[in-house]
Length: 106
Image (cartoon, rainbow, N blue to C red; front, side, top):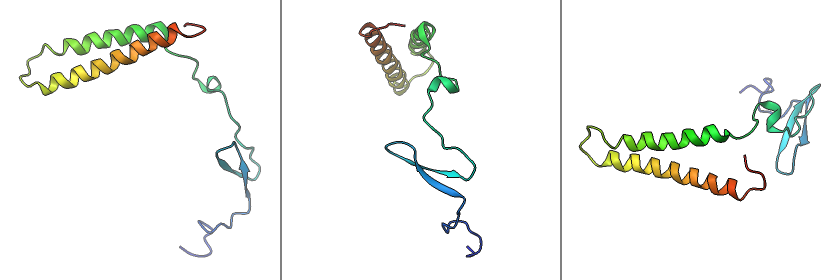
C-alpha cells in the first residue's frame, strides 16, 4: 500500500472517536451526528407475533409429525423430524409458561 493513499494509515483527520455506550466506541465523520440508541419500534420491530404465531407454531409441529408417515425406509429422517418437532414444542411450551407468569399477557 502506498504511503500516500491514506488508507489504513490513521491519517484521517476529519473523523473523531466518540463513546457511544459503556461497551463500544464509534467513529463519526466530520459533519455527521453520532448514532444514539434507538428503540426497536422506531425502525419497524413492534412486538411479538402474538396468537397467530403460536397457532402457526402448533400447526408446524403437526406438519412435522405428519412427515413421519412417508415413503422413507431409514430411521435417521425420523430422528431429525422428531428432534425438530420436539424443539418447537419446547419453545412453544416455554412461551406458554412465560406468558402465564408475565405481568401482562399478550
